[in-house]
Length: 190
Image 1 (cartoon, rainbow, N blue to C red):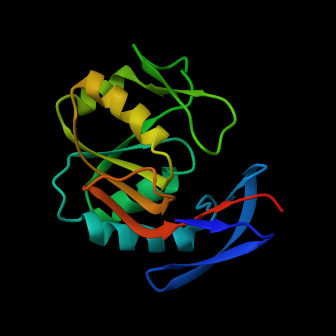
Image 2: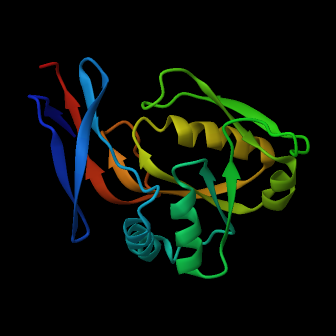
Image 3: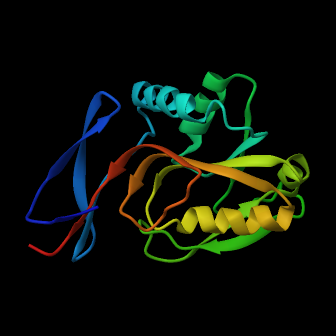
């Protein structure tokens, strides 16, 4: 969904009965997004984990896989809510402690340049051949999900679904996408 940008400062979104006010910020001169950040907001994170958890509780998966860093609190809270579920983090850079890491490139709507995505070889062994659910806080173009799919395919995982709090715009559509609410994009310069 797209809305004409006419200088709006905020967007009030209904997250299954909870209203959140999101600041609208430019990512290019003619594209604006509503900023949604769970980091540092324990109450909102736990609320979203419960609502999203209820949507995915019947999905058969072994692990949640998520990118660092904004999604980490959501993954932790979601796994706690679901009980006994674990998650694996795909990092934005290789770390010295990693054993035989796998690497791919990712382009996101919220970052100016391409980034890399890395999964530790220790985590590769853990999820190899497993059913995984890919998690992010917001999906827009699907660039992060696609980069994660590339690595998961190399590992030999079965991606059984995608979960996110917000689905921004109309670029990413999958039958097995679980989300709480649509989020518009604002198009046009003021």
